[in-house]
Image (tube, rainbow, N blue to C red; front, side):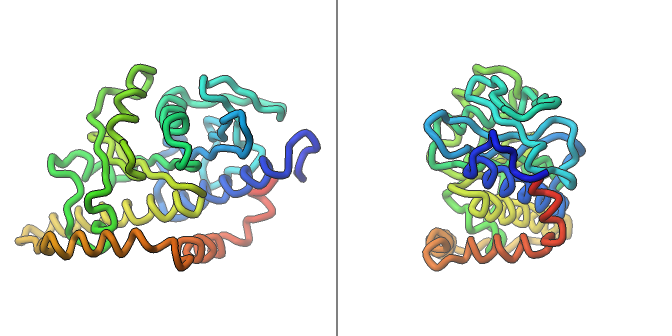
Length: 251
């Protein structure tokens, strides 16, 4: 399927980029059947964003499978066919898209390692270089049940604050950024940090924690990543791993 005439070039490019991100999340084994979501705001004044059509496996996501909705959850998509979306996905993502215009792309996952750390009282520990990326830059949101209540959006946004990554306690992980590349970078590092923590703690030996000074210094180093293009380079390298699927995801 080539770009439909009724879809702008900007929206179609956003659809292709987001479909690629869905497939990369699958490639790195961060999926949970048909649950969890990745959203991307479409350029324009309407504050519309794309979310997955509920029921499509992330491995098979295509540009045309994504559904355009507004901040009230109304489907405003001009493509034909079933346009069902998941209510819990809308509640979480709409809250952040409305409150944080700097987070154009938001990723939410239910991985084994992410849920394990989300279940630990102390949350993410500064055990590894990957974890130190989030030192002092990670939010937490207390579990309130399946996210179906619009009232929870206020508390979710308040807990997130100015951070770009959050652990949803007893639930999973959430991360975002100004583009699909930035969002992928955030969720990849957060997931790897959780994986390492679970494995380190399972060894049953004393854990080594870097000094406060080193933790803060390393976090500041990570904050400068975007200056020299590391994030975009990482995104391009990741996309190259699924390059043979491009004709399929962008249709």
